[in-house]
Amino acid sequence: MIEGVKIKRLRVMPDERGRLMEILRSDDEIFEQFGQVYMTTAYPGVVKGWHYHKRQSDNMAVVRGMMKIVLYDSREASPTFGEVNEFFAGDHNPILLHIPPYVFHGFKCISEDEAIVVNTPTEQYRYDDPDEFRVHPHENDIPYDWTRKNG
Image (cartoon, rainbow, N blue to C red; front, side, top):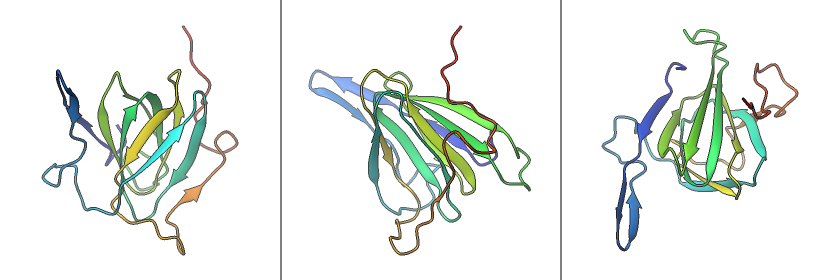
């Protein structure tokens, strides 16, 4: 696994009224600090990526549908430099994925309906100085192909 990436298995507590799932707590080993909480979605087959941050870590959980979340370690000093990790997160695998700075990440909706991601980054989004650095989802130097792999 890429250095600094952490996974927290999320516990779902169902009863006759519905269900509850804690995503991130301030007493979790994975918790650093609070910046904000936001949600983003993707429609079936849509790829959103690639980007990385210089200051913030992301804490992503897919709360509806399924996403393929892919990470690429671009940090030359990292022991996992050049490594790619692929995670399947959502309804069938409830996890929180902690993504450190300088690790490229993107996701693709692999469910039949829109998928919803809740992210709790360690920093607030700065509209006047965004900590977000993007590359094209398909035309780049990242050794990853978003095409579905059959077989």
